[in-house]
Image 1 (tube, helix red, strand yellow):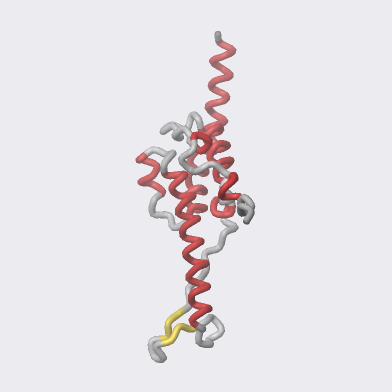
Image 2: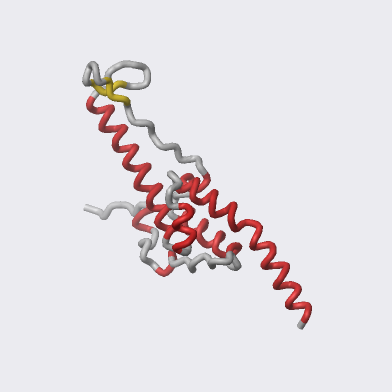
Length: 152
């Protein structure tokens, strides 16, 4: 019996690999440009960009009709057990991958920034907030660095 063909998961180094060690985003955002490129590349290498750019949609759980004590689909028909299980799997997969992206970001930002963004409900909203805070700072740092280089 031949070994199984490698999958994307087995071909990539583990998340503990040095390949995925991203330097922390500086409190003042001075390393924003390089941080952003590194974290997005790492997330992309994991196939999780949809969770950063907002394309990953959280599955909506079926509603429970308390009068019938049944789980109902959006069209008003009762959901089959297999449909409930399938939706639960999709929801769990979404939550797991969204949490993985959050953890990648949380492990590379300061505690102060973490406290500011932790209540946002998705990785894409967290990234959007961090991006909004730091995007302009990188340009200012580059301009300042250019001025300092010309002064010497």
